[in-house]
Each structure stands twice: as C-alpha cells, then as structure tokens.
Image 1: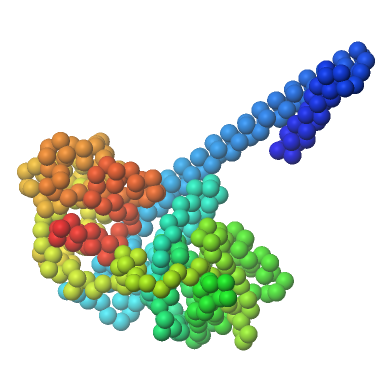
Image 2 (image 1 turned 45 degrees about the horizontal axis):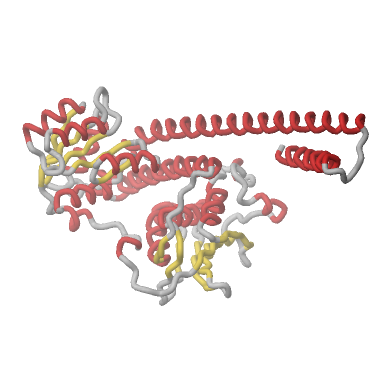
Length: 439
C-alpha cells in the first residue's frame, strides 16, 4: 500500500510542478489544458487522501488485533500457570523432602513429573515470546555474561531427561572462561532449547557434544552436536520457520516448532547469529554466536549460580510468614515449602481483608500476597498495609500468575520488595524468604 501512496505523491508533485511552471510564465498552457491539470491535481489529492485513510484504518485494525491477541495469550498464560503451579511445586517438595526421602523409581517418577511441568512452562514462555516478537515488544538487556557457567546450568536442567535415554552430555569446557555480550535470561532460554532438542532428537545411548571456539571477527561460537536423526537436505531450508517441525510432528517427540524461530529472533536482537550444519558422522550440529566481551572480573549478579543445597542454604531460617492466597492448593503448596525449614511457621488468610487483620494482630516477620484476590486485590492490600504503618517494618512479597514485564514492573513500583511469578519454584521462594528475613 505504501508503494501506491508514494506513486501518487510523485504524480502529484509532477502535476504541481507543471502548474507552478505555468504560473511562473515558463510555459504557456492553454485554458483548457490548465483546467485539466487542476482537475487531475484534485483527483490525485483525493486518491492520496483515500489511500492514507485506508492505510490508517488497516494499521488501527492490526493494532487492535495485536492487543486482542496479547490479552488472550496473557489470559491463557495465567490460566495455565495456575494448575501448573500445583504440579511443579509439589513435585519439588517431594524431591527435596529430606525427612521422607524418595528413592529409586519413586524419585525418578517425581523427577519425570517435574520435568514435564518444566517442559510445559517452557512451551508457554515460547508462545509468549513469539507474541512479543510479532508485536515488536521484545525487551533486551545486554550485559556481560559468563557463558561457561550458563552452559553448565543448562546441562543441569536437561540432565534428568538425558539420563532417561542414557544420553551423555559432554561439555569441552576450555580453561579460559569466556564472557559474551547477551541478555542472560534470553540466553538461558536459547541454550536450554538447543540442549533439550539435542537430547529429544538424539539416539538412545548417544552423545551430545558442546564445544566453544572464537571466530575471526571476535564472536564466540557455541556448537551443540548430537548423533540423532538429523535433518534431510531437501528440508533444511525450512529450519527457523515458526510452527514447522520438519516432519517431527509425525513422531512421539514433543514440540511446537516455535523454539528455533524464537531463538533466531532473540539472537538477532542481541547482535548474535545462529546456524546449522550436518554432523560429519551422524545427526545435527546447531550453533550460535555472540559478541565476545573483554576479559574482566565477573560481577556475581551477572553470572548464573548453580542450584543451592536446600539443607545447607535455608535450614537455619526462622520467622513467621503470613501468606494471603485464596487458592487452597497454592496454600498447601506454600505450607509444604515452608515446612522444609523447621524454623519457619506459616499463617494463612484466604482474602486480603482477613490478611490485613492478621497482619495487625500477629505481627508476622514477612507477608506474601497474591495479586488476584477476591474482593480487595493485592495492590489495594499493600496500600492499606502502608496506611497502617505495617510497611516498611514488615517486608511484603508479591506472588502471582500474572507474569508479564508490565505486571512485574507495576508490582515493584507499587512497593513490593520482590515480585515472584507462578508456578512456584521452591529455590526461588526460599531465596526470597531468606532475603526478606535476613536483611
């Protein structure tokens, strides 16, 4: 449509220029030709006006459609995270319970449930990433990232899946600790996608091989090779297309075909590169490249910490916690998390009004508030707590299935010490409790 508008503008400029020449005496148009040019000029103006109006209407409709799609996806994300919270949370409690430890098949079964929940969460996040990319709303925060540590953490997250198929993951970790410029959260997502794909599409008893190398133009290349089914040459051009699984949809391997497309778009935003080549022996080699950062001391917060040991990191915590939540399963899950630390006690309220009364009466050491409560919302409850002078003496944490960047920013701006999202991660919850009680 813009091409038509530009053509009309050029045509109008030509006619206007000719008219101006006539008015300046550079030519002698007849009265009849002059009238025809005036009519043509007005006709072209009308066409431009109509085309511009249609373009604006089309853009408005596209914006409305994008907002509606974003609202729908956000609503679906919230709805899916609620039952996922129960599955993911209780499986972690069973896995971490040192008083009644699981062994053998029972422990493996719980880990399988946990992995299934993590996989479902990854699919939800991929769909949300896709929506953000299509709407042009993807936010990137570039920092120095210690890539070796990020890879190690990603390996930890897919190790259980690899063990199910007796797949060995080899990371040829160089002595040099490389740093790259990247968005840490996005990079973790991409690495996890690559590794999980290599495990899913690799052969049983196979190997996933990870290697790092520097490129001549100062990038770091990360290659992840498998010895799996590979990709036929006549279909390799279909890689990195959304919702295209290149025949894998006819197998029992889970997936949506979104991950590689999202990875490519995110890497482009990070000034990175992505590609594929055939494994010289069998299978596939996917690679990504990111700009190398100068070697320096890595600030602790920019690295990726490996999962802590609950027993040693949180066993000494003590204090009274008030949790305001209307969902019974979420309440039971929080009780299970808190019970991992003998020094912690949990009080609960099913709505904000009762929560305010209990906060005033029992003086807890910290408060965890759900946002979407019946009646008074978590934001309104936080405002009331401030009016009652309970905040900032008692730290208040938000815990909600509303997980968009706007939701998190709104929560922190309102005054919550931390804004956590569901499904609950046991490590994350305990770390937030530790930060609130120790500081």
